Length: 102
Image 1 (cartoon, helix red, strand yellow):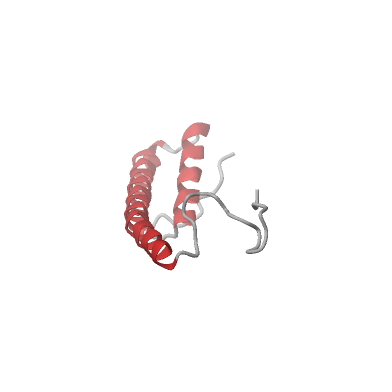
Image 2: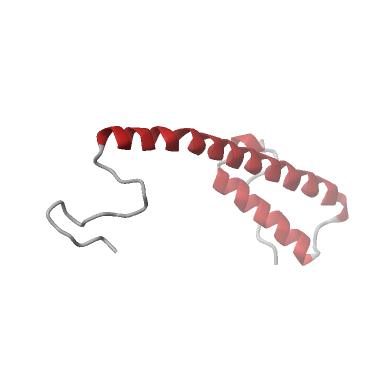
């Protein structure tokens, strides 16, 4: 049996959290997979699913762009400070130890 939608279809997708939108999309997909989608609602549910996918994609692209902007700033700050190593090597567990964290 399909899960009930996490949100009301009347809630604009842009107002949903990422998790709520993803959960609603999962519920719609479950409806489609179960084959119990009412023919009268089929197009409406498909439109809602498409709207959710577009919004989640927009948010992911925006997040990726922001990460791409912030990482170089962090790397620059780390290089200027000299305290952090962005090479992926976690370094010693404490300043006086030769042991790494892993």
